[in-house]
Image 1 (tube, rainbow, N blue to C red):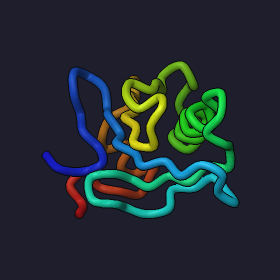
Image 2: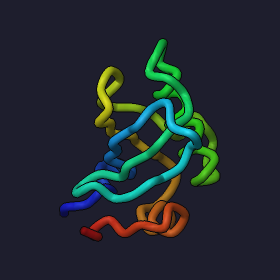
Image 3: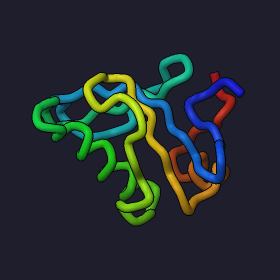
Image 4: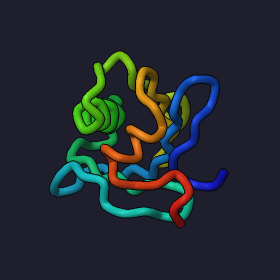
Length: 101
């Protein structure tokens, strides 16, 4: 399955391209197989990573403990894991489809 969302081993994976030091935190667009996510935090001392995880937890209305960074801690391309929420619910709350191009 191509797309920015994927269901795997009972969790949902989100593939992101993160842009730090933006004017506001928001999902900006779709870039190929990734969502482009802008965050106001700088890429220093994991501030941007924390902003990404906090934003997704709030946007998806899940506890922060259910959102984890599994790849890309020091890179702009990140993979985030979500537990306790279905792929369909993530698609609905983020307004994207897993197979959209």
